[in-house]
Each structure stands twice: as C-alpha cells, then as structure tokens.
Image (cartoon, rainbow over all chains, first blue to last red; front, side):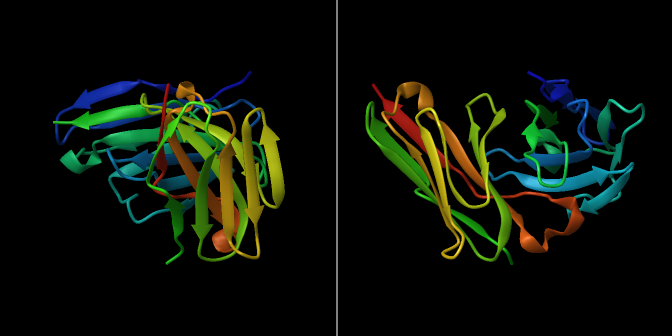
Length: 113
Length: 112
C-alpha cells in the first residue's frame, strides 16, 4: 500500500543552523501539507501546497520557513535559522484531491539544542 | 476562533470494555477525521466522514452535523488499542487549502 515517507526520522541541530526536512508524498497526490506537534501539545497546521505554490500558511510559518517541491516527488520544509522553540515533531501529509483523505508520514523529530 | 474539543482527555479501560471518545466543534465543517497516534509519534488515519456512520473492524465513527458532534467507539477493546485518538476537522470556511484543525487528543489506556 502506498505511503508517505519522511526523512530523517530524528534530526538534532544547533540553534541557528539550517535544517531541511524531507517528505515523499504518495505519487498521485496533488495536495501537500506540513504540520508540527510540540511535545505534549496538539498538532498544528503550518502550510499547504498545491499546484507548485503555497495555498495557505499559518502564523507559525514565518520568514524562517520555506517549502519546495524540487523534483516532482520530494516535498521539503526548510527552517533557515532554527530556534529552541522549533523543537517538535514535524508531519508531512498528502492527498489526491480536495475531498479525499489526508495521509500522514511517520514524522521527523527535530531537536534544537 | 474555530475550536475542536475532545473528551475525555484521558481514558483508562479494562480489556473488553466498550469505549467512546467524543469530539465537538464550533462551526460548520466539510469533513471530520479520526486519527490514531501511537507512542512512537506516527499518525494513522482511521476514518474520514462528513455524515452518518462508518465502521472498520471494531471501530465505529458517527457524526451528527446538526449537533456538531462526533463519536469514536471501540468495541471489545484490547491493550493494543492503547494510543492517543485525535479528532481533526476541515472547516467549511477553509477555502481551497483544506487544512485540518486538530483537537488535543484523548489518551486511551486499555489494561489487560
């Protein structure tokens, strides 16, 4: 069964460093999302991406964040200069059409020291 | 602000018991998801529904659109059902992005 994959599963970085989190959505899906979950808190929406552009972003998704779909298969989230408060689990999700179910990747645990 | 509320926050049951987890939301939605999150952190989609009832194995999800309420039921619960169960909704006013708004989750522990 097709699934969303994410790499790495765990990333440790120093404050101020850039990180790139990678996702491979399900191949025929057209809508892509990043969510994050700070430890002990609920999952929060970061950004949605459709037709090669951002369709919505939350207030969390400031200038330090960017997303890209560089090659038609990968979907990446870049954090330019990480802060301690960026430590969280980051989930990628994708779906085929507007009314279809979202499928989630296993997540990347980001730890900023 | 549009909100998703879940109850209870924590639930402990004995193996074999019938479990109900509730979700209520503040305004109209186009779809509601029930998700399962295990201690390792990964999220698995259980159901997406916009009306009525869905069943998969021992899991049943119902939704009442007029009352803005959904329930997730687990029949004959088992220790392997222990997880966090999360309700997430897609608002009617959400526009083309179709993002989800999540509840805080219900931590279910099923003891043998």
